[in-house]
Length: 465
Image (cartoon, rainbow, N blue to C red):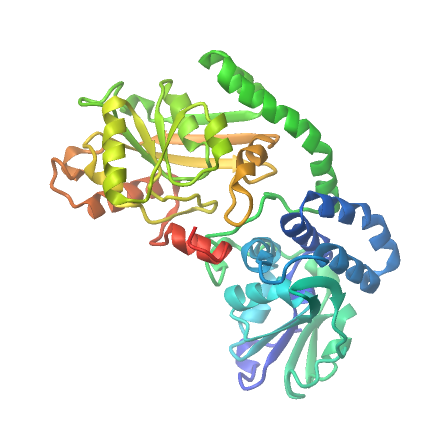
């Protein structure tokens, strides 16, 4: 049994086995599937899935080598960001609350040991668990590309820590911890009863993550995904044609039967038409079709102001889109011009956020009109995320509309009181933007942040978007 906090000597290091102590699941296959799919593409992921029966037969050690080779061979080392952009979300969701408490109650230096390649786990352990040292398999690199083979290393951890350190591992992974002065073992049977780590206990808030897969890719779930993709492509075409060719009410009915559903509230608080020109609907940004849902629930045409979407998204959009130039003067003129023509939907965050947080609202909209209606949008998908930071944005609508089910809820919060606007109330544009952000966050139960589009893209894609 792991000792109490007061009995631990902070002058010694705690060396723990990540898979055996932190993670509840016994299989690391889903993490290699994420690498294969997100970094290598669907074909590589399909090959890995076909090899799964063989992985079950050859044993853990050889199976690990096969998964590493299939997942990594040929990938560029310089652009590999799965370990920091995709995997942390799935690791956090797999952490056991009990194992987390054992590791985090130790106040001294912590060293994480993993059987997976270091590039998969290092950023998670350092950034989210504040681990000082990480030991994992090192991959061979030739001409900037992973070979899928591992560097030859010793099986013990001598030299990484001293013989006075504390080891924490499971029964089947004791050998690398033989150098420790004392080793505490985690019972595999007890791990089956561990509870998931609550979000409020995350050492660092999970605000941004990338990748297309919205589910944990276990072998069964991945098999279902590949069986669904042909049907999903047909469904995508039907959904697009219905939105363009059918009358509004008939289109909505057909979309409902194909799995696209939605709920709305607060429509009684929305005026049919603004007093002067159009109404500016300000909403948070969850996915690329937020303005389409706003239009559907209002049952009237709107124009969507966008920051950066692909040409194919603009092509298949059933609502008019206007692209901002990121030049303040030009964008202000553009928004004012469109407001004179009719209703406008704008997402001041400038980019999507999948988690229950709101990014900083750009104050551009605040000075444009006094007819401002905040709208709180929430969105759930069942299989694929329809947004990406580092991937191909041209595929955003494809992945989104291939989902078996999509649900969106929109809450209209009513027209902003004139006392809270710039034009009548004398508020600054920053006060108005912060007020609208706070009202939307309150309606959704989300948390406001000061993070921006640049922060997201620097973390997930290594650029400023």
